[in-house]
Image 1 (cartoon, helix red, strand yellow):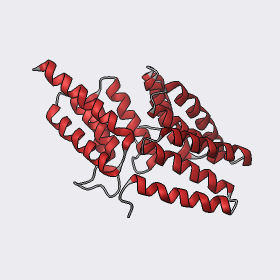
Image 2: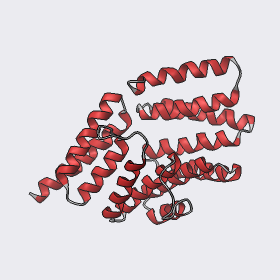
Image 3: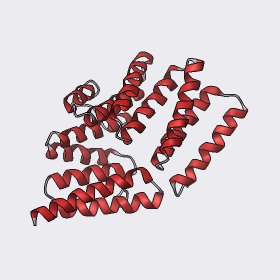
Length: 245
């Protein structure tokens, strides 16, 4: 069992070396994609961008449109994590077009969700909602990774549009839908989002506990990319409680 994200990174290195030695180029696209996302979780953004660009370059060279979409989508996600909404939008729009062209529902969902995130960063939540509405309706389940990703972005938009009750309802349903979740489980990104929602609703004690739990979990597994965001959320919470005191 992988105990930390840093430990898991070693397996990607080994896999890529085998794929290079066997000249399996489509597999290299997959490995670079996985490595890039893994490095982003570790907060190693320079390495993440380099590996995703490598994956995109190989996929483009061999004409593998699905892995072009995958690496483009991941690049969009990483740039959004870096708060570079315009670059996130550009990569995600390319990914969405390719995904629809090859009929990949998974990559279409991931690209649409990242586009919604980019639009939120760019101050245009209404446009972000329009992208999500092409992929979601009231009957859309939360039983796939792509659907949960889009629903998470929908909750973020609801919070940004001052609809915390709707955002909380969505997040709680997402958490309930994740296979293997238990009372001891922690999903740092959802814990952060739920904490932000509870803060908006004035439930500061619950929000503080949730955010601190997420910080401890992120430090334990090495999920460095989200720790500063969690501290920023706590900072907003403490500022709010001091102002309300």
